[in-house]
Image (cartoon, rainbow, N blue to C red; front, side, top):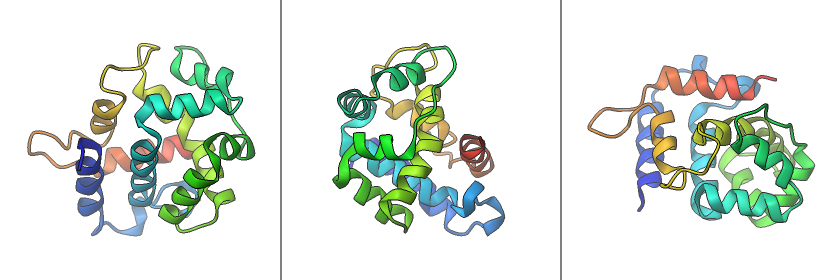
Amino acid sequence: MGLLDSLVGAAAQAMSGQQGSQAAAGGLDPQMIVGALGALMNNAGGLSGILDKLQQGGLAEAAASWVGTGENQPVSAEALGGALGPDLMGMIASQLGGNSQQAAGTLADVLPGLIDKLTPQGQLPADNGLGGLGALLGGAQGGQGPDLGALAGMLGGLLRK
């Protein structure tokens, strides 16, 4: 198990006792989204793998805007689902408990902001996004658990349009 698996596991474990009041927009709870994002990062080869898939899938300009320091370009659920492919989308759908179309919609809402936050200087981090994801999970390193309120707020903010 890698660092990301540990971080996602820690967040999921800590969040399992949380009330539904911390559910993100759209009725999805942060635990589900964290699990889906962790699975995506692991199965796509980290942040660089996700960006490669997006570039190869015709979303190079949108993905570059998410990494860059300017405004993030939106992406449609259909385009994102097509770029990531049926295998990844099926896996994400099973993580979120829905179908591939619903999963693509959620990712289209969350992924631009997440990649933007993982690349604050406008370039891919040396750790392939894993350290940044750990920071977004609220500092699950160093013996401290994730800040669940901050995580839920970040995910809720990413899901709002």
